[in-house]
Length: 260
Length: 300
Image (tube, rainbow over all chains, first blue to last red; front, side, top):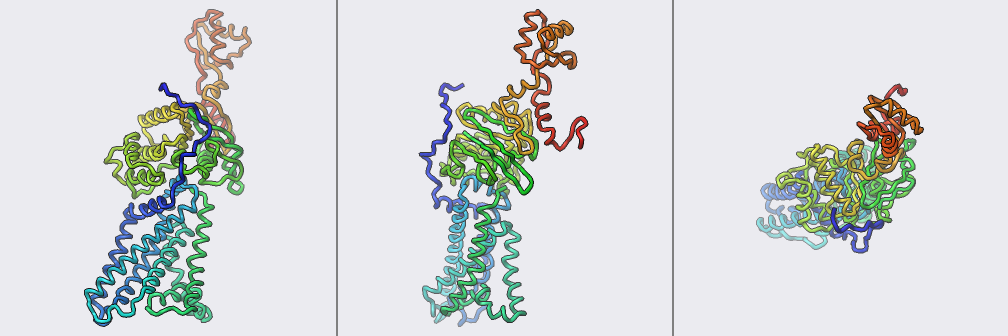
């Protein structure tokens, strides 16, 4: 029909096509977290609960307890619950809705997608930390207690950040292994509880707990004390067991999985 | 443009795709035809790297899919229109795709207009879409990056008759501009109408391939005259066996050959056309041992 018939090409000319830059992948993965209702409300819930818990503590705590550290400390627990869920959903919402079919067709190098998700997760984790620190600082200012800012060092922000980042990467790891929201969320919460029950019944395990149980090795990160070399080592081994190894196993699974 | 060579995929003992080879040329629509579960989808998933083959290779324009930079710009893929996040709007899904491929934003509106999804529909969440709307969205997504190759799995599923005609026109035009289209279907009529080349698959194996005309030739020609006995005599004198079918004959010869004979014998014809059933008989026959339903005394 048209006068300009294109001569059939048997090979693709890809010389002018650049690969998708990694930063763009991170941007897209970040967007995917907040462009659905579930994702949006989870993010909103993290911010809202952080605000609520600080407000409650503000009114409930005795004046001498209204320090920056305590304010920041109370945000650690609810955020510690919700950030792993965020990490899990970043992975499993794609599998549950089968959008991986599109995602991996557009990015056949699956590893890059997963790393982009890791970066997106870290950005959200950073956001949660900034909100927690900001609100804690605000509450401390309003309380205006003498000694409210005592013992606050840069390393404390680092330790608090590390704690939340560990949670979110741990969530990603469980998401990658199970590729199913319900299973990943339940197991990531039940296994540590089961572990502490078993440990309390079995003395030998209780002794080893700081080395193998995040629930035992992590509290020093938000207690305000500095960690001993041994405590850092315990944090390292327990993270290896519950975060690094699951992440690698999950990554291996996703790289090989048939996407349906 | 798409070259499939010796492709095999097995799951344990089950062989889903068995030594499949075919090629799709630029400027043509290739219909990938087969009953449900014949291995069409598995073959297509292997093409775009979502499933790994047990043996064999697929190249697109001489490249492995994984080696194509920003593949969305070269190969448009629609494997399952329902595999979209139900909580995203149609527009958001296209926006994510456009952002991944690095396209300008206006491309999303262009594609929505192309597949006739209104602004209002594009703003609805996909969970509220009909299957037909999802197909349109999926086709829009496949065309986003202005690719030169299209791989579409059952794109007509869920479209209404007008929608199917629209899609036919769209893909025809796309092929005429030099594009390569591979589309799968389990519906023969659909493929017959649109495809330049047909690849028929059953139980993981290719059972026939060629142009619709080539495949039809094997079924013979139907011919009918006012004086059928004269016609039968003329045919047999020329060494052609005529099988009575209805009020005419089925002859294993092409229409031109029969036309020449009857013209020479001055027999006025009422009908001269490809024999009834055509591709459908062929399709059922070729895939008979791969069907779930059995016909005419086949042992169940």
